[in-house]
Image (cartoon, rainbow over all chains, first blue to last red; front, side, top):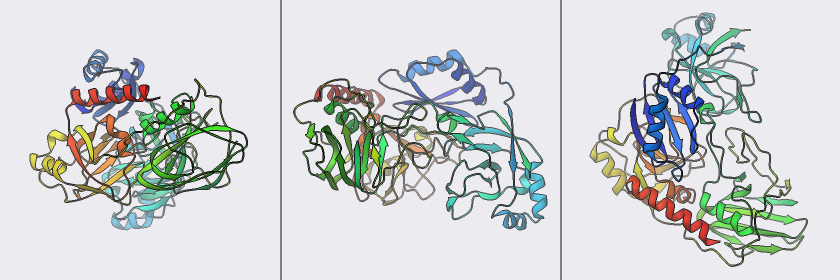
Length: 197
Length: 294
C-alpha cells in the first residue's frame, strides 16, 4: 500500500486490492473518518482533522490491511430497453448492426468498480473493446434518468436526469438510488448484468 | 412558519453536510461557507447543525407567522436587518435580503431551525443528486425545535473576504513539474461564470509544463484543485462528484473552504501554499474563534 497525504483532511491509499481494503475499512470503522471512496486501485479516506491526524489514519489503514477476503458481490440484473439516442451512431462507428452492439453489451457481466459522479452512479467494466467509444465531444445538458451509456470501456446507468457525455444505448426503469433509505441498487464490488427487454 | 415571498438565484436548505456515503457516489454537500453557517446558528441559539437557508448572490423576501429570532451571516448583502447579529422580528414583518455586494453567499438562520426532510442523516441540499430542497417563491417552511441556548446579544464581525486562498499539497502534487506549481502559486486567478457548488472554475494563464499523467478516476478530497487538459484549474467543491479523473495539483486547506464559498464570478485571488502543520493550526484557531465569538 502506498499512502499520499491528499489534503489536510484526507489520505489517498493506492493498492491493487482496493476493494478488499475498502471492505475491511467498512467493517472496522474509526471515529472521525467521514468518507471512503474506493476506485479501481485506490481508496480515498476523508477524515475530520480536528479529531484525527494523517498518521492515525495511516495506522488504522495498516492495521486493517488490504488482505480482506473479497467475497463475490451480489448479481444485479438490469432490465434494459435498447433504444438509446446514440445506438445507431455507435453501431455505425463500430461498423456493426445495432443488434450486434446490443448483444455485445448484454453478452457479458460487468464488475462495479466504484460509484461516483452522482449518488448511485456505478462505473461498470469492462465493455467489449469492439463497442467501446469515447465520451461525446459535447456533453448533453440533460440525460434522462435511467439512461444506459458507454464511455471508453466503461458502462453505466444514469440514476437521475443530469448532464452527461456518455453514449446512450438504452434505458431502464430500475430505481438506482433511493435518497431516503440510502440504498443503492449497485454497490462497489457487485456484478451487473444487462437483460434486454 | 416561514413564508418565502421571493427568492434569488439559488436558495437551498443546508446544514453541515452528509458525510459517510461517498462510496455510493454521495458527496457531503452542506453549507458552502460552514463558518458563516455555524455562526448564524450560534447567534440564534440553535444547534450548529440546525438546517438554515443558503442564498447565493441574491437573497429573497421572507415573512413569518409568529415572532421569530433570526440571524443573517455571510457575504455583504443588502439586508433590511443588521447582518451578523440576532434580531427579533415581529409576526408579519418582511425580511428583505437583496443583492450581494461582496462575497457570494449568506445564511438565514431562524431560531429553532428549519423543519426539513432528513435524507441519509442530513437536510443539506445537493441539487444535482436530487437530495434536499431548493427553495422557490411561495414555499412555506416550518420551524423545528433545535434550540440549545438563548439567542446571543451583540454582533459578530468576520472578514469573510481575503484575496489569498491557502492550499496544501494535493493527491497529485508530486506528479506536476515545478513550473506548473509555480504557475498555480504566482498567477492571479479569476473565478469564471460557470462556477457553482460543484466546482469553482478559474481563468488565468493556463498551467503548462508537466501536468501529471493520464490517470484513472480516483476519489477526490474536498477542495481538490484539478487541472484538466485546458490547464485552467477547477476547485472541486461541496457538491462535487466523489471521484475524478484529472490530476490534482494542490488542495484547498480546510480552514479556507468557507472562503471558497464566498468566491463569486469575477473574484480575483491568489493561492498561497502552507504545510500540513500550519493548516491544522489555522483550523484549530478558526475553531476557537467560532466557539468564542458568540
